[in-house]
Image (cartoon, rainbow, N blue to C red; front, side, top):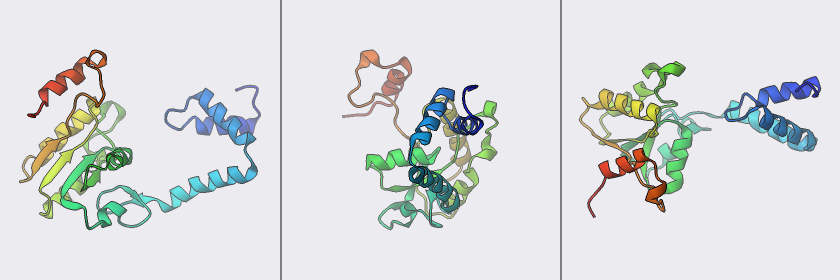
Length: 199
């Protein structure tokens, strides 16, 4: 970093704040930006500013949107009686990409992580309970990640929602399509056996 001019150091420091970007990657990105045309750099800067100005949370499911309500919540062909609860918009996008789900969503914007200071009050649970209290929901699909934080969040959701007269389900966990048993970790094999189904 010593060899860089001050504006480049500042850019590297800012890029290094992005998740998954270390100092070396930040330096590579900074050098890429330096080699880019001024027009390309302006487009990049404008798109970052535009995202911050225009994107907000859907008033129904808390997905990211330009409108008050996202396109999924506005879609009348979606089954509004089923809500799939996800940790973040990336998880929602992954489920949508699969093309196999036609219900609606609720985005928590996080998962329980007490060591990182993320408790139940930091998750968007109140909005989910409000949606359920309106009486139109028959099933909640808990689609949190299968790591410690996701499992803790799933348990919390189960506790919070067990009094409601709705069906609670959890996404299946186990063997990936095309997976080879000898390369699969113990926990995945254990969950595959636990969540087996009839054929």
